[in-house]
Image 1 (cartoon, rainbow, N blue to C red):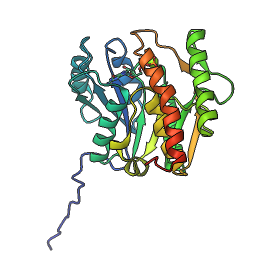
Image 2: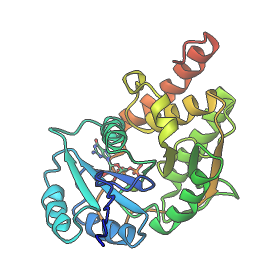
Image 3: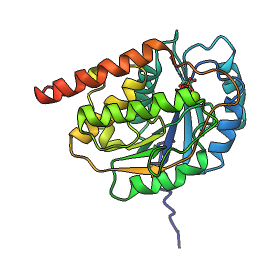
Image 4: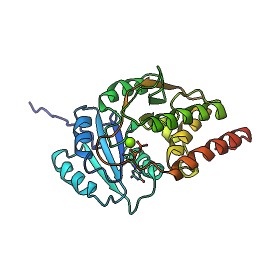
Length: 255
Ligand SMILES: Nc1nc2c(ncn2[C@@H]2O[C@H](COP(=O)(O)OP(=O)(O)O)[C@@H](O)[C@H]2O)c(=O)[nH]1
Ligand SMILES: [Mg+2]
């Protein structure tokens, strides 16, 4: 008697249910190894680093790390420093093309703890389209930030809420997860803003669509190594962006 064995294998190298964490970098050579290792401990997550040709050699270090973590760590390099928002949009397009189901934004500087990722992923796997790692759920959960930075961030969150009526308590948060479906609904060519304003714009558009989101409380810790890329231009963009978003939503032109 002859027995026939059929071998069904899935040819797509990316597991369909896997999540991707996008980490944008500009001069994060002191932080990138640690954040990659802490994140990849969680087996459900791959990482895409989007580096804007950091002069400090961040990308070279990522290349080395890829040798130790093949098929879990990826790198996209862009020609020049072009802002956080554009780096994320590059990453979102990459994630959709590679068929990831869940996509996260996370900073490289260890301000966002990767141990929060599994809980945040569970929210996306239940009923939520977006999960926000939020500093302002129960008071102000920020460690080692100078008072000026806390005030700026907290007052910005109040300004956004009062101007747009969006009830999200941490609208500038940069630790955020999205389902694939929600990213597919966004027209990336219409995302206008680059810095903090990019974070506000993403949340505003998703809230404006009536999609369900969850604010998950986190503790935000200031970076110990490297320097912040925050500057006056980013603050000014955020201030004006909020007014523009509000006016456009009144005129029903948000999309
Ligand atoms: N690719 C890319 N990453 C950026 C850019 N600006 C900031 N980042 C990264 O975005 C994250 C947040 O920036 P950071 O300077 O820590 O901002 P802060 O936490 O608001 O002070 C970090 O991982 C930065 O390296 C940029 O223009 N391009
Ligand atoms: Mg930071």
